[in-house]
Image (cartoon, rainbow, N blue to C red):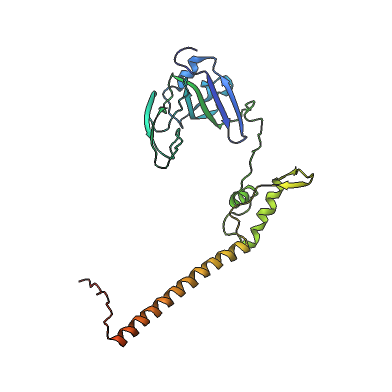
Length: 248
């Protein structure tokens, strides 16, 4: 591979879910991408004549040794960062643990071995393997609001009685499975965050129980204060009361 070029480009189309990998043949054209950062957009002519006029966005990449590009590091070489929990390129083992890891800067350079891009606008062109193929999603959404958005239902201010409609719609996306005993069962994801009458009643019951506990605690406190006052009067004992602070 000539110096100052990368050989592999991974292209993804989030609209259709299709992915495609290609090898760069004309390395001189790919050098026009050098100096761009992650999340930058460029014309597809740098990838080949068939992609001219299309717009792509850089999402990442890695060098020959496999070190990934890291957003925010304005370098075209490697750097060693002290990463913590939640950071990219680092999987923590203990809570609060930090570790210094080697990563690649976010600027495209000649040392990259692979580059990942996303198709933003294809124009009027039909790109084989990207726009003419629709790859279905492997998993369906589980959250109730996302399911309603999938079927074009309102996502806010929904009557709790209409929430059960989501559970019926998700069954249409399920598939039959055969159990060990030979029985057939419809398998579909469990819907999360569905507000039903039972869930609403359970929440109100929990709130009522907390209010009852608070009421009993206040009642017992008043009874205890009354008992102390009565015992103080019987035995002529002065009950200590902390002085109230006054703000001048």
